[in-house]
Amino acid sequence: MRSANLLTRNLGILLLGAGLSALSAGACIGGDDAKAGAGCPDDLAFFEASVWKPILSQKCAVCHSEGGLASGSRMVLEPASADGYLEANFAAVKSVASIDVDGTSLLLLKPSGRHPDGHTGGTLVEFNGSDYEVLSTFVGRVTQGKGCDAPAASCATGAPGPRMLRRLSRSEYDATVRDLFGIVPVGHPYPKRLAERHHGAV
Ligand code: HEC
Image (cartoon, protein in one colour):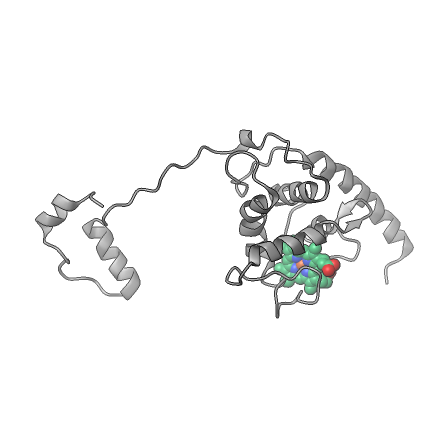
């Protein structure tokens, strides 16, 4: 049991956290993990690109899934192999995001280790670090419709352009066969001159 004193002290920190996260909610989401694409995607697209892929699937799903340590919590995530996993996970995370503890979302408090009762999973998201900012923007979007009007486009990197296909070079082919089958190929599926002539063709 926690003492009343400890609770009061934590409350101060929580209020400070609430103020800071409100400030960052509308901020430009830069950072390594926030390649959300151009413009302002809808909440589900934002969830998939910025929340699910770089954060939840990497750092949280191991416990927050069926059979995981946090399978009894309110945030149980479906694996990407399940039908409709994205919508289901979006709904589950959105609902946890709407749980407010003294002005800050549970989705921010728990993984940053700032909840008064701690987080069994530990501190996985640094307070005010780039993951925290992304989660904070997500909370702002799904609970208040905030953060979408922020000029996300100014954070977006240019479109990558169409993917080009080409035939593997001989050394790439060798390396691929070696990696996949563990054998060093002798000879090639087509003669050298033909390979050269076709090199670069699709
Ligand atoms: C090592 C296992 C583990 C990992 C990894 C983990 N968690 Fe947890 N989490 C738990 C457990 C267990 C609980 C339930 C007990 C508690 O609240 O600490 C929990 C509770 C929570 C809750 C509160 C849910 C509720 O019903 O009150 C949230 C929100 C949460 N975690 C978010 C996250 C996020 C976001 C991540 C990834 C950044 C994460 N957790 C990673 C184990 C984990």
